[in-house]
Amino acid sequence: MQLEFAGPVMSEQSELLSQTAQRVFANLDGADAATAQRAIDEAGLALVLVPEERGGFGGTWEDANHIFFAAGEAALDYPIAEAIIAAAPQNGWNDGKQFSVMALARAGQMAGAISAALTLSVEYTRQRQQFGKPLATFQAIQQQLAVLAEEAAACQIGRASCRERV
Image 1 (tube, rainbow, N blue to C red):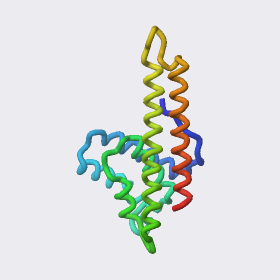
Image 2 (cartoon, rainbow, N blue to C red; image 1 turned 135 degrees about the vertical axis):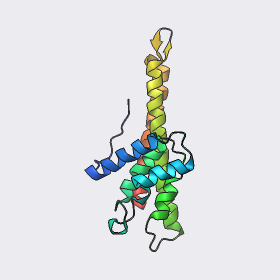
Image 3 (tube, one colour; image 1 turned 180 degrees about the horizontal axis):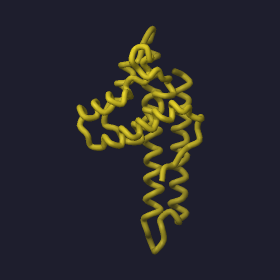
Image 4 (cartoon, one colour; image 1 turned 90 degrees about the horizontal axis):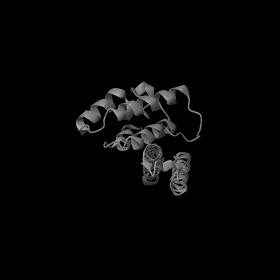
């Protein structure tokens, strides 16, 4: 079961990009850095912000944010944010812009990670039995899951806030 948070409606292109990132990252569990880089390069994920006329995807920061989210959700052990930012055109960037861009990347990754943690927690509490009942039926557990869901929603808001500043 995948938990989803309401957010902006994605374009078909963004949806495809997000699904591609999720698929590629899911296949990289336990992969070494060279294998990860090869898979990411083959999918063109690091070129999301590079204009099409220069061989890239021609995407937006919103598109990059979907990749950052998917990387956090998959606990990707590869510096995808750094790869995307290094490939992006950086005309006129100063230290403040670099900081904002990395904040966006980290916020996206953290939102993905906490979303995955919430999904895993809900699945576990539905499956695990105690006193003959699923843990998810206990009020104390439900309250803790609600707190985690609030924190996941706060990360989504932080992710959206960073996106507006880039």
